[in-house]
Each structure stands twice: as C-alpha cells, then as structure tokens.
Image: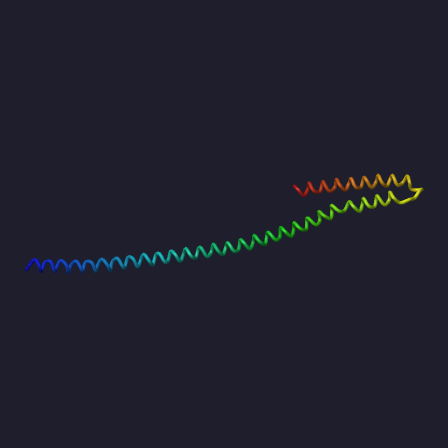
Amino acid sequence: MVIVYISIGIVVLSIIYLGYIAVKNMKETKKSLTDLSETAARFQEKVDQINEETTKLTTTAASISEGIQTKKETVQGVIQTAKSSPEPFKDLVSSIKNTPNPQRETRDSQLVEIGDQLIDLWGRYRVKRKSKHAE
C-alpha cells in the first residue's frame, strides 16, 4: 500500500509542478506578446511616416513637372515666334523687289542686298542664341 501512496504523491506533485510551469509560461508569453505589439506599433508608426513622406514627394514632383511643362511651352512659343520672324523680312524684300519704279532700279538692288544681309544677320543671331541656350 505504501507504493500506492507514494505513486499518488508523485502524481499530485507532478500536477502541482505542471501548474507552476504553465503559469510561468503564460507570464513569459504575455510579456513576449506585449513586446511584440509594442514593436508592431512602432513599425506601423514608421510606415505611416514613410507614407506621408511619399505623398509629399509625389505632390512636390507633380508641382515641379507642371512648372517644367509650363516653362517648356513658353520657350517653345518664343522659338516658334522667332522662327516665323524672318518671313516678314522676306515678304518686305520681295515686295520692294516687285515695286515698279524706274527711278529706284539702282536702289532696288541695294535694298535687296541690305535685305539679304538682314536675313543673314538674323539667321546668325538665331544660331548664336540657340547655342547660348544649349549651354
């Protein structure tokens, strides 16, 4: 019978020890879960900050892109105006050439030369200006 009492005592002590270990593990697990949730909260905070910075960066990039596009359109308009400017000079020279005036025949050739020189100077000016803008 002594063996039965000893066996019952061992079983009772084992159950008490099992309860002790279970409580100890629960406390450690609770602490680990608390640490994990704090870490997740800090991580979420960082992710929110990154998302906010990304939104600001996207807004800034869009603003810069719009500014560049506006400036590009303005410069293209100026370039188109500059390209079309020699045409009135050519029209003026051709109208001077075609004007019938016998007294000005000698002056017409001089005017044609001056007009051609003006057109040539205008072309050189455009090329020089383009090279300055390219730099």
